[in-house]
Amino acid sequence: MTDPAATARDRGSKERLVTLRPTAPIVPPVNVSGRALMVVIAIMSFLCAVTLGAVTMVQEKAEAWQGDVSREITIQIKPEEGLDMDQALIAVRDIVLGSPGAVAARIVDRASTARLLEPWLGEGFDMDELPVPRLVIVTIDENNPPDFGAMRQALAEAVPAAALDDHRAWADRLISMARITVLIGVGILSLMLATTMLTVIFATRGAMAGNRHIVEVLHFVGAETGFIASQFQRRFLLIGLKGAGVGGGVAAVVFLLLAAWQNHTMATALNDQATALFGRFSLSSAGYFGIVAIIALIAAMTTLTTRLTVIRTIREIDRQRADPSLAEIG
Amino acid sequence: MLGEQPLPARWPDGQLNLTLTMPGECEAGEQTARRMMHIRPRDRNRSLIHFENVGLRYGMGPEVLRDLTFDIPKRSFQFLTGPSGAGKTTLMRLLFMSLKPTRGLIRMFDRDISMIPGEELPLLRRRIGIVFQDFRLLDHMTTYENVALPLRVRGKEEASYRSDVIELLKWVGLGERINVLPPVLSGGEKQRVAIARALIDQPEILLADEPTGNVDPPMAQRLLNLFIELNRLGTAVIIATHDLTLMDRVNARRMILSEGRLDIYD
Ligand SMILES: Nc1ncnc2c1ncn2[C@@H]1O[C@H](COP(=O)(O)OP(=O)(O)OP(=O)(O)O)[C@@H](O)[C@H]1O
Ligand SMILES: [Mg+2]
Image (cartoon, rainbow over the protein chains, first blue to last red):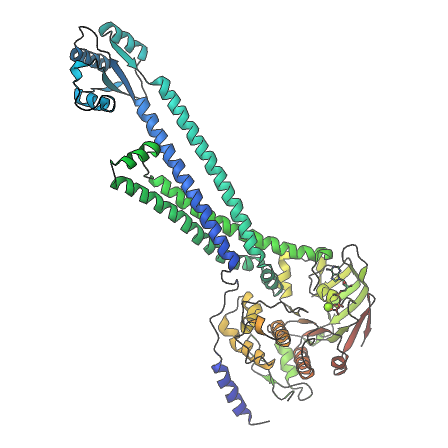
């Protein structure tokens, strides 16, 4: 032909002219089903995170109530003919403080009592004109509670008008109710998590189904299972993290905003209503930690499902090998 | 036109930088080629693949292949032919170990393939290049990336194979289509990409199922020359085809399948 050196030069220059695009990843970039998976993951993790936050709040509230209730008892003194209320209050307090297990006793003073009654009696009523009962609030040592029977006995002897209320009856009911509420919450959260896991698993498998031919080609050009799995895992871990991060993050932001709103609008009617209904919205650090855990769990689940799906796909291809009737025609 | 351009033989190990010429022009490369393939002369006649009374049926259907007994020697070149539906693709699948025979014994690379555990299959398949009848290219990868895929999954550095892949693509006439995605390629172009992908790692066995089904006669001749050149470098080549004119161009072994039986004409 022609001068070989010239041909070589020519070829060399041609080769330099070839510009390649940056090498595409082995697993194609996120497609429609990948995006759908991401949305599913985001929604499910949002719902999970909200459920978890709510359950954490209820549970913390119940614990707080339980603590308050079992830490306090009240002694009520009914006004009677000829009873010196102030003296009776002091007598009661002294008796209570004298018995073991009582840590502190506080007389609810006139001003506070008036404030307590305000919703019923209105502002500016004269307490002296009405037979208003008075209270002594006693803080007890939870671990070493006083002998309520003996305390009642002593009170009956000294101040017959005093009645000890250890809140047991309704405290027990309240506590069991709180427990049931928490139990229901945990139940809902478990169902929610189970649904999320199933949804994530099926959505991941759905998204992977479109990649079967890629797994097959990789398998046939000599890629090992671990290699193929790691390629897909990388892509799906990212999808899982993004989806769960967005869902969980939005939930966390919602809690933060609610808490901020509550702090900001403290003492407005709407706020009072909300607080009365739901308590404080502030999510404890345990709640936020739980949300992070949910994000990690969902991302890990997505990745694991991807790995198992790749392994199963390859096993199926190899099963066709053993049972030719399963082989596709081609 | 044909045979004018020499086949570049700088295979991925990068050690050999020898330009082999087309068949019939020069035999000088053979010594070097044999050295490169680490094939000692006494290995030459040992068989790479051995079938013994192999039968295969799909499910409950009739036996598609019956009592096949043959050898594929190292560095051999053969055509596999027979009417449509005779079982050529099926036999190719057996050779690629993507099907297990219903009965009989298959030895490949001196191993009984029924004893090979699943995890080892990919490693053995790395020694086999295959051109599927339906190509099986990945649509999200360019021509270049598809051809480089076998090297990539073997963990090779891109820098080490880049120029080999580009040269091979130029040689199969795809120099202008290097950055193109398969969906916009013509059937014949896809076929050449599939062939280049099968050749790129210079396998010990090349299985090509209708590799010239979609190209014009000059290109078919050119691809045939490529297979011959590869064979000269030490690869055993098996080409399934119905193309009689193609077979008439080379004096090679013919394996003819009909009604499930195989006749061999050396
Ligand atoms: N997966 C399968 N299940 C059942 N039967 C199959 C399957 N694949 C192929 N067959 C049958 O096996 C026979 C051989 O098919 P095969 O594809 O091997 O033929 P072929 O020689 O490659 O034909 P062609 O020249 O048209 O490509 C045919 O009768 C076909 O119908
Ligand atoms: Mg076929």
